[in-house]
Length: 86
Ligand SMILES: [Zn+2]
Image (cartoon, helix red, strand yellow):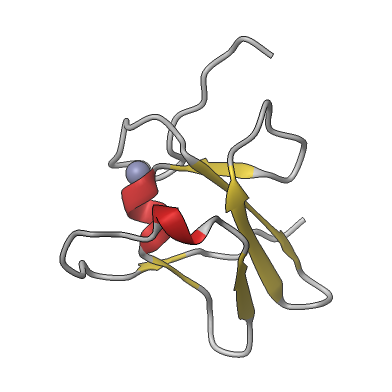
């Protein structure tokens, strides 16, 4: 529980503030506030990348983060999560 998590984006070394997971069958991506630890199938994202998270066509994104964490910075290019084959 003590290890810190970093953003999974390869070009980013910011600490993770959010976590996302996805269900291939439901074509849904869930984005939530990072809590204690990451479970298998969960991936950390920094606040900036979490705010720019987008999903592939046909998928839905459910953002369950508190509204107070919505971005105050200008929009940046979207980040597409490549669904990983299991
Ligand atoms: Zn990041």
